[in-house]
Length: 203
Length: 306
Image (cartoon, rainbow over all chains, first blue to last red; front, side, top):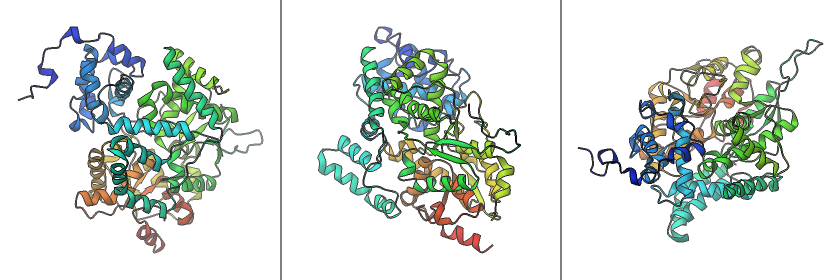
């Protein structure tokens, strides 16, 4: 028996749908999402489908019906590992992996409640570091994620201690630097990031 | 745009040159990949020209802002184009983000304009004329089997390698792909050149789940364990990868995964250029083989015994 909460066994209320949702997804990189004819090749090849609440095929249908609230609340978009098997196999040429990326972007920008808060914590911490140094600094990434997802600094430190043995092993082999590497012309990188933000607001 | 490999008037072949975009992992957790790649390219007489690169943004930038995910790698394209060079990265994520930015700048009028506007704010421009290549393409196609075979000094006969492509070297397919996305063969070709034997490996194109390492550890461990187990069950002596994130998953996290699944596996994981470097007779230390977390000592010993 399907669970009662399963959207595919509930009526779709068109009044609660946003007809142009598929266009929004396409504008954020989800190329040709409207072309889906529900063959299911994406779900068939997906290596993480077993962890998803909606299969990729079903999610595409929901996107095309405009079920924005349900799509952006789904765990599927955060479980996606960006392996691009679906994109490679889609007979309609839909960039399905980027459909997932576009949904992640929209969910974050619209301040939606997110199924796995570690994912946006990871993305946002990553981008902050790149904006500051031009390059990623792995120890700081771990620390920022812990700070964002744990209850206060002590709890965050507890998470970091758990990873300390691996960190020490890496350090011993010269694979963990204590200081961030930087792009020399950092101002150039920052100007690009600022411009992108500015263009986003203008839109 | 560059005339690499072209035969000059005097009949000599011009030296291959590329702008080098190692990416963030290669100056930290994947230092040995950087060391081995520089050593191998030097031995093969291919010049890697350093540029003042920035992070490609990986899955993170594009998941927060579509345009940011394109504009960040576009800066590296602009720097390489200024040098008049095609660009290469050993990291499949950096490679994919860079060619995607290049494609978008070239073929999508609206997105292309936005990328140019973002670059313009930093006084940069990208006209769209250079090629983006993963190092596997350069080894298998630009340098090619003859040139590599000539330079192999210590063939690694008797070793069985699990050829692990992972995702982004061949996926998603480009308009003009250098290898098949569903049934590739270049990794096996290069492994064969070293004298090692590429085994039949079912999981060679399966995702390791590396992008979920930090957000969803349970999912990540399940995926990586399946690949390691398949490598062992297929009789591999070691796994060969050309991705720093796959290496982090398969090598650095192997001990934790083995403990979680109560398995006593110990499967060395070599970077492609570490393996090739050994065959070219480069000293293991120079290839950073002492930096892999799962020990490569026995593997190296078995070579010396030959």
